[in-house]
Length: 305
Ligand SMILES: Cc1cc2nc3c(=O)[nH]c(=O)nc-3n(C[C@H](O)[C@H](O)[C@H](O)COP(=O)(O)OP(=O)(O)OC[C@H]3O[C@@H](n4cnc5c(N)ncnc54)[C@H](O)[C@@H]3O)c2cc1C
Image (tube, rainbow, N blue to C red):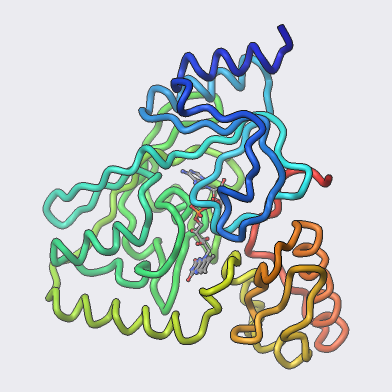
């Protein structure tokens, strides 16, 4: 038996056959619809299974990648070696007074809607962010003046050694689209949001307004990763790209959106190589024209083909 067969058997024992995929194209699991094959894609259904998968990758020293909704990642065309774990089956959301407790595989949009249903205010900003709760913590996701940091109480995580721990807001070093999780690679299992009682009509009106703003400004009809670049201090990435005359330009099937210059869309079956070459073209042009280095918000993972 090959080593990969042994690993497959062990993963099936932990998560069940229906929750372990082999040689799975990641373009089916990223919102930009790009990405080569992962050796193994696993979907645990309990926290114990998450811990067991982590212990397994430690035992075999297998590369390990965690994915949320795949809304902020580009997987290179050669795919991902080892195990990719997604927590989409851990998606329960519940309410306790003014707190919402969400498992990290839940959509942050669904949590925002759930807050509205319970007349709780604070998560309106998240109503259009297409990530999971875990991804939103890791990225300190935010929009229209709100961010996760404003409403977070604490999280339960499992470390890369398989140990469970609780981390409070201040432990997480939440900054602009970043957190300490990007260094520790802890796996967020569960999140407790601290909200406040609000008027459901006002909450809904705010969500409707933000949805309108998003739909009118963003090219949501095409697959993308959202904003590719972070906001450079003192500038807006989209404006710099627009003023560089790059809208409508790109490599292969990837193109700088004509609707919002901060977005690069997968217009026509783009490969990761097309998308990354378009990113590099944008960075080079903006640097030449304005002397500004654009830093990536999106994560690029995996191997070249
Ligand atoms: C159309 C569009 C609009 C967007 N608008 C916004 C916006 O307004 N504001 C904004 O902030 N972002 C926005 N994004 C980007 C993206 O949705 C966010 O960054 C989101 O938080 C990523 O969540 P995810 O679950 O998709 O994570 P992924 O993209 O799958 O992963 C991102 C990172 O999070 C890590 N991660 C995922 N789950 C966990 C977990 N459980 N524990 C620890 N780490 C984890 C991954 O390892 C990876 O490093 C947009 C994206 C798109 C496509």
